Length: 147
Image (cartoon, rainbow, N blue to C red):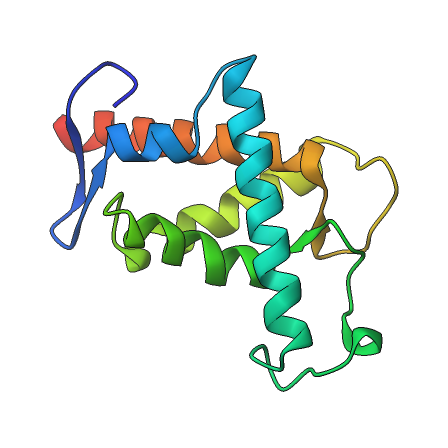
């Protein structure tokens, strides 16, 4: 956890591995910013590939990609982030569903994008807010579960 504990109990179904979560979504400046941005770009690339290859709701052409290149939609994040975190053993996908959606809307509402992208897209600046909200929310949950 943020306080140094090795794991966080979310509920009877899932556990967060703080070291693995911190490796993928570090909080801080310098190298942490670079790591978050690298992961964001990986998610964008994966989302665009899935859309162009038809793996996302049958979309098969560049014309059908409904968001700007370099952005992520809520749907992209809900699909890809839990999948990636669970593949690293950081947590189970079902644990993140509500937390990811709340973090997305917090990022969308708290920070204006460089260019308005639409009601369901965030840019890289908003991604940093999403990560901070997500990690803080999980840390708060730890405190609530401990009491």
